[in-house]
Each structure stands twice: as structure tokens, then as C-alpha cells.
Image: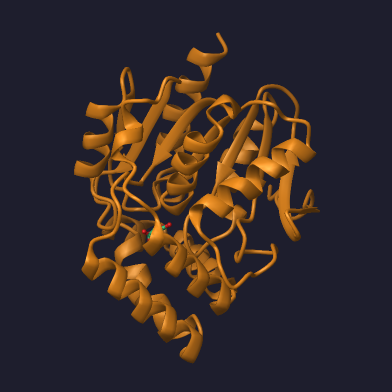
Length: 271
Ligand code: MLT
């Protein structure tokens, strides 16, 4: 059932190649993956929604089959995906981002608010990195450049998924590991440094004027539920869904629950 690689296309935008899936017809939904993954993490959502929606899922720069660049800020990623929407003649989309994809979603909303019909902020946060967090990112960037992705994969995985996923859905752990290993170390290093530069977006939250759904795995260690609750308090009219038995990769760990919540939100937008 993997549409993903059957439908893959590439377009040159802003001087780089962006690989993407563009499946189905109807109101558009743009899915933005996390770090250090690629668009294949949205397979279950693409399969579910493409009969009714036009689903677009790019590989962000430095990831998957898109061009690796020495720099990759979340603002640049937002500009890339809006250029992709332009090229695909999509004026407005529901923007759904997980973690780093959520940072890109907030950057996109700040730069191009008219392009967002609604927002889905999954396992993400509005705050910037702490000084310690920035330092850790720089160390991790240097480590993957020296040693490749494999030596970092286990320590990353330990924080990415809930215990129930390890015992009951080992295939999800294998899939997440495979995505990490597929990422070019130079792309991962550029994204780490880009994320370290991202500003605090707290002030943006009260300016969000489109329907917003916030989703978080109840056991998310990287962007804990408290971060989602904080965004929920600050985004007027937002909805919050906490996914049981899921960590940071809530859409992969509990796809049925994630999809139920997402579908209910989309139905409210398109009754
Ligand atoms: C992600 O899943 O995108 C990362 O955990 C984001 C981050 O490193 O802040």
C-alpha cells in the first residue's frame, strides 16, 4: 500500500530539487516530516486521505531524495515548500507538520499566513532551543559528519518511541531506524544547525487565526505534552489531542488514533 515511492516526483524550486508525493484530488493537505526522516513517514496518512484530498508530502531539503544543502534553516524549508505549492498551483492547504515539520509549519504561517487553511502541529513546540540544546545539536552535527548516522541511530531511537511501540510494533522501530539511516549526514548536520537558529515563536501563537489541531504522544520525551498544552492555551480556539501509548512519532506509533483525530478535524473544515 505504499503510494509514496510510486508517485514520487521532483521539481526544481529555489535552486534545489525537492522530491515529493502528490496524490489524490480535493482540498489540499501538506505534510511536513520530522528530523531526520523523510516523507515516507506519512504513508498511513497519505493512504487514508488521498481518496478525498489532494495530499502533498515533500522531502524537506537535506532529507530523503531532496537536495542536500550546507544550510537548512526552518525558514528556508518553509520557503521551499511554499515554492512547491506555487509550482503545483495550490493556493491554500492544511499544513500538518510533526516536530521539525511543526517548526517549519510555524515558520510558514509567519511568512505566508494566507497559504494556510488550517494547521496541525504534531509533537512539536513553539519555544527555541536552550543554550544547552544548541550545544548538543552542534555536537550531534559534528558526530554524524564524522561517524555517519548509524552510531547515532540507537540513541535517537531510544527517545523517539514509546515502550509499547518497541514491544508491540517492532516494525515501526525498524521503519524509523531505516529513515534515520537513509538521511545524508550532511543534510542532518545542516538541519541540526538550522533548528538551533530557529527563534522562539511563542508570540506568533496568539496571532494564529486559522483552525488549529495540536496532537502529541502522551509519552513524547522530545517535545513533551506540556509543550502542546502551552501552545493549546495560546492558540485561540485550538484543539488538543493526546495520543495514548505513543512517544514522539505519534502518527507512526498509533496511526489509527492519529488518523481518527486528524480525520475528525478535517471533517469540521470540510463538512
Ligand atoms: C524531530 O523529530 O523533528 C526532532 O526531534 C526535532 C528536534 O530535534 O528538535
